[in-house]
Image (tube, rainbow, N blue to C red; front, side, top):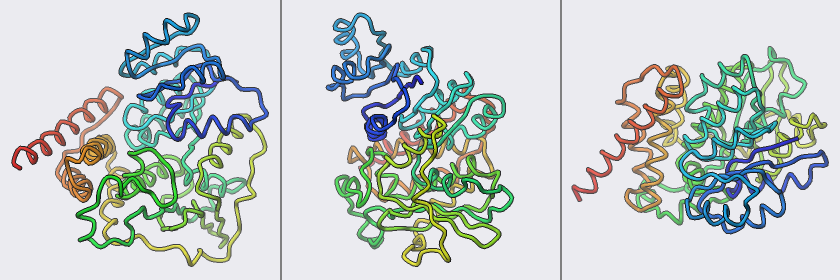
Length: 383
């Protein structure tokens, strides 16, 4: 089976390569995209023998093009889309941000399978993806929480699901007071207590924006089962999700906080292998160690309902402003508490627009980023 891996040097990409080594089925990585860090390209080429590689940087493109004349190389913004012209069976989309939406859609439109780690695809373009899936393609999530739910739903009737729970770690600041949050540094925010992830998702975890996104994902992945999605906090990140059934049973999925487990499950589905459900347990009641979400996070989590109910441009706007604000924070231009404050402010004042296609979503994405830049640069100039 032939795979394309977008984001090969990210945390998901690296873990996926580790999991591939444990897969006994025949597989081949025919193409991959790589970001700023391209130091290991020689190693990747010699190990996986790809037909094509997409670079972010022009200098990497010219260097490796001269070294490997038999490989197709691309570079620049959205150059990874050219990889999808290869002959392949499955796309592993481990990109971060809005840029992951177009390859997801293109792959599905070409009737391929997508293993999706790019949650922004569903947050921004969930309706377009669901519409496409009615006629072509297949989508399998890689997120630990959604894989946990999928495992709990194995061999279950859609009519018997009462509610779906996903869990949050609470991030590094779960026990902080509102006053303490005012002085949070970038390094502190990147020091997640249980997970090792990319920078943006780590920050999103600490603000609970990530869980807001995952609730939106729940809607697009599981709305045929139930519309009742909830969040509880597991500070150890061992319980990833559970399902309450109408017949009174509760299934819980529990494993160590590593992405190897959900990636292995998703790949087993692709290869039609027997899936491992040894980490799914029937329980009598919801684990008492799980905590309720603190009140200060409820406003952010409730934005998921705004996106789900109203659809339109809200998902694109939510993702764009968060993506921009996280970058401003990582560059020490705003405070940690500014992220959620500005997100809520813009989401409560922006006008929802109909988005019938990818072009509409791109326009909303650009305009939302401009609004954030205007707001932040104005603040900086005032100081």
